[in-house]
Length: 128
Image 1 (tube, rainbow, N blue to C red):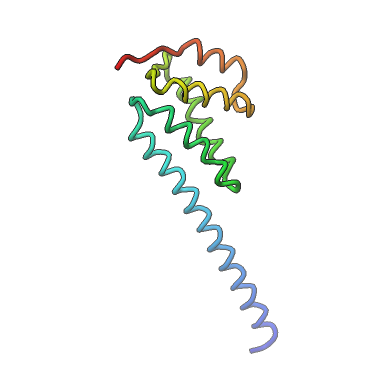
Image 2 (cartoon, rainbow, N blue to C red):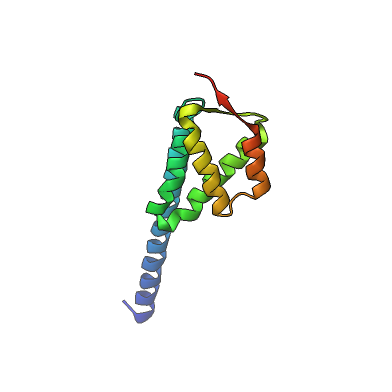
């Protein structure tokens, strides 16, 4: 093999390695999103809906590299919830997590104060 061929093989190996890294990262992101969707399917309308959403949001602390992804997913879901629902029903058992979630989103500057007031104003207790 000539020096040029060796250099081309080296570049090809590096390129393949980078493509594999990107594929692994894409698969991991896809897995996070699938877990979130599965969690939503299992918990929407239950007394654990906001507890599970809060737990998902808190998981970002274990995944520093994907912290922004956890933020983005939780924030987009809560903002979509605010757009879709005029009244947000919360079970009494889940109220603590609802308040913690929205308060934490506000403290981390993912929600504005006016949005926080709006959410709390539309919140009602869901009867069992």
